[in-house]
Length: 620
Image (cartoon, rainbow, N blue to C red; front, side, top):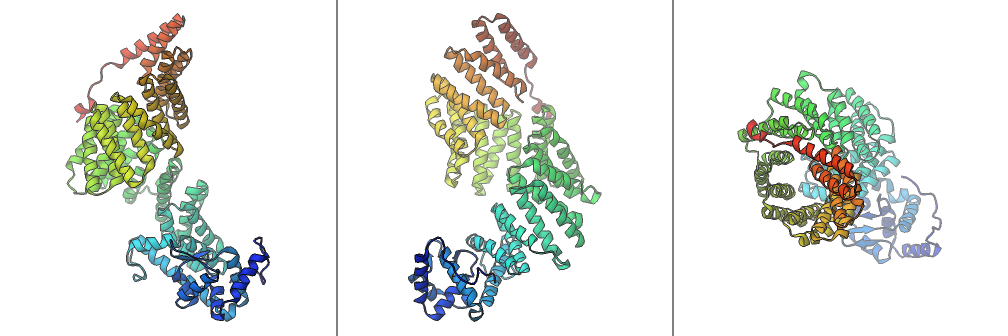
């Protein structure tokens, strides 16, 4: 066992405190003193009665209560756990080392370690829906998860204790049993710690190749989330070499890369996910690899979309659909990828090609007879969003309504709230303002019910936007003001920028020019920070309007900035308005030539746009 030294020296807390601990210890019987010394074996300050029973080898309740009476332990009722403070724990540990043989300290630590290994492996099996090695230890996955949550700190610390005492196999067993739980809970620092401890403990023998390969995989996932992406890739390659010795080689490496990419996408690191998926794609190019390659390329296309690189997403998404047709993939999966390809084409400015893909997705949805209602709802949700991006709002409203109904029936409340929010925005664009308000209010209510404060504030922003469109500017200001503040405090700069834009427009409509300028200036600054050029351009245009109304000379500067911003934005809707207002402002300022130039540019843009045709209806 690790030693804290042969004797106890006074600590910063002072000799007087130590004297109290010694006096309390002296009041115990010899068996109680032995129990006190053994309880210091726990890896953390807090422990349960169950682990105390393992350490002591008997029912612990009476001795635990006695130790509380003499102030050597504390009982924390809310967590049903016992606690030994730092100075007391050190005192007990030093005495424990001195009496190690008489107390049977080594055997006690073996019992505690075996307890953690068996239960961690059983809980992990429940979480993975596998047959638990000891099914009697937990009655359900919920109880297994609850135990993992309570014992998380002790399990992580026990890995270190096992490594320190040369119990490398036990350390690896606990660390690997924790991997799924820590990954799901996004406790990546803990995952990185326990896997690093296992990997650093010693050089693996041939019998340990699988253990080290698994540890390297989990270490890479944690590193990809918390640290250096390139170190994560290096760890995965080392893991693949280990698997190669087990005749699993490239297949295992590809699976690991996909796991790493999934973690990176959850952590909002799509560009790193793209690199991992590109590496995975290079290792599955044979005819037999078609199903795996389709999954990887599909995930790569989505990662590129999230990385705001839609043009690069088109090629892998197209190849995914070709492979899906070759392997006869389910209809709904093909519909989903047609929707995503339509989104990528839309964002790349290829609207006609996008409409062809969306029409294909709708046709596949109609052909589906799988009865897989959750997947049908997910496809309709994705397709509805793609239709919104193409301005096909009424079709989007219908599909999103169908998806929301399925989610509610399945009691998938979070997904239902998300879809109702999108449906509300689509309804707003169709002119059905009050129906939009109803959908958005319901979405906000569902988010509040679940305690999701940030999505609820985002819904509040959308409700404020609808109220503003309906001319209820006072109500809009009342709901947008706290929503903007809450989103900013939560670090959602994009959401805060949008709420401030709506708030500024509501103030402007009410004639509160000073408040409008303040909100719109903040909105333009935040939109620039998050890279939303279109919304920044609209904020600058609104600032120009507000400044014109106030007779401020800054109006020309804002309107020129708005016109310039629209030139580089993905959507130029609003540029004509900016140029016309700029022409008027320049004319009033006596800058006639510049005014005429702005007017000519606006007229040229209007003549180029022309009336739009319903390409989607023709395609369908």
